[in-house]
Length: 336
Image (tube, rainbow, N blue to C red):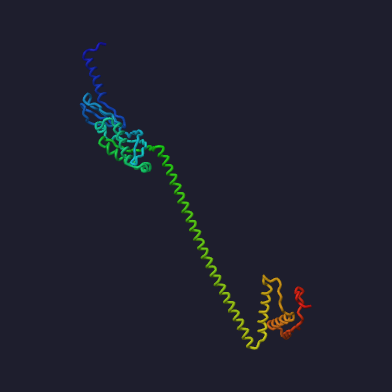
């Protein structure tokens, strides 16, 4: 089949239209933004999806990833305010908010953010002491985030997070800090031990004080009760003596006999129950004891009542005849 000139023109025109369509249709993936330049000048930004540009007049300038990205900050040496040298590394997270500013306000965006973060790490960490640096990592992260985020705002960038991954002091400094921590813990243990000993002594003293107070109160109560008992006993004795005196005044002779016999028996009981007496010598005649016992019996019969038998009068006390004292065999000076 032989094509004529018209057919060739039509085919060429169709091919040209297809090429124009392919040149003007742009597909932007999700998470990306494309800038459009017309004769080298920025005109607009293409959103994700299907977009059409003017072929041969407009072209895609920069293809930017607007998802949050991570940037590793390499390890660097930092000298603190108290002249301690430490090694620190960090990680930074950032996101492009304005594609046009990120494409046309700064060249080599990642390198710019990296150097800006490293510079501020040295500045922030260098203004702090070593102890503050090791114990306030959250404060360091907050300060770095504020400083870096303010610096990249003109570039259409949002720094979402800056984290210090590791801080490594020199080995000798670590050993010195370990010794210092050990000394602090030993001092704290000694202080706690001393406070515990002091508290124990105070508690023991308080216990002894309370014990002495209770013992004194017990002794006072016992003395009070003993005095009360003696007072009751004295009152009873006085009452008994009064009753005997009244009986005697009324002519009842048996009352005095009962009173004397009771005291006599109590005296014998006290002498016989003495713990320091082994042998008791009493100059008492048997007839006196019997007469006393018969008198007590008569009193008892009179008290408990025996109308059939009249009470026997007490036997007179017999006075023994004085005899020659016995000879002591152990006395060598005694005349035989």
